[in-house]
Image (cartoon, rainbow, N blue to C red):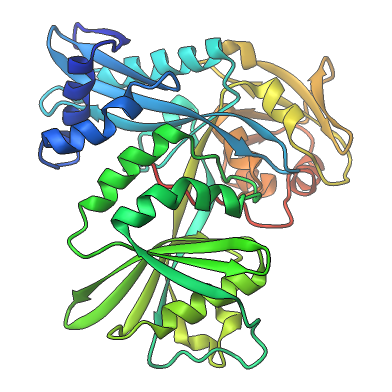
Length: 401
């Protein structure tokens, strides 16, 4: 074990050192003065908090920013979006990450955060801190030469295209205008955008933003770039946000119209997004991958269970065990009328990571029980929880951080 201390970072120099340490952990070169100037204020904003591990020099860092996320039923709850997790090479596997993650979780709990989320670079790390895979996404490839929209696809509206310099100014308003309401989606506060812009500026090909306007104004936008891949011109759609079917169809109609493109790759899309149904030949769309998208940590179990809604089914008492945040330990009655703490005997026993996997409806309790992730004390309970936690639409985040 390493003899180190963990604390919140305070000065600009500390934040820049941690920012570069994280880049190094991802095998990205140190940021330039121009890049740092673009993100410095955002990374030190009141809604941003970064921990550092010292021994005595900086050997690890973990960062999070505050936002809100939509839960099943439409309510928004306080969210901490975790990113910037890195440990200096040569100091890994010595307890540094564990001490930072523990300090961060305690900070979330003390500040009244309900849920925490992250995008995991490795799938074996975060389960031990109570995170579980809570949303899934799929990657699509469309053969542009083969794809034809069906005659009755909505006509859509007008599309205008902006380069990075013009679009970056508009992105916050565009995202707000599309008002994502799907469970798992999140707000993007002002301090989200500068690091996002820096990330996109690393692309070698120009970043373009197509803005769709319907009868009532902006109702969708797509962010994309085009480059050559194995001799073919490939468009990669990094973001696709829309509020109605006409905007969805209108943006796809535009993407298919861009010249000198052989294929269109849309990454990390919702599992139930009906892209195939737009085309005369649904096989023009190929699913190239289905992966974990968002990892969730239920920080405040009572608040999280109360915030979401449940489908009609027999109520079930769940016993939650959370060694990292023992205030969450206990039994909770969950039913169509809501959730509350209970003194009744539990029907199912589960840990924080398994509760996270249930929360957005991505996984069924019966499947988690069948794979040993939930202990069954009442054989009828998993089927009831399948219904209670089920969602009409697939949950999805759609925001990379």
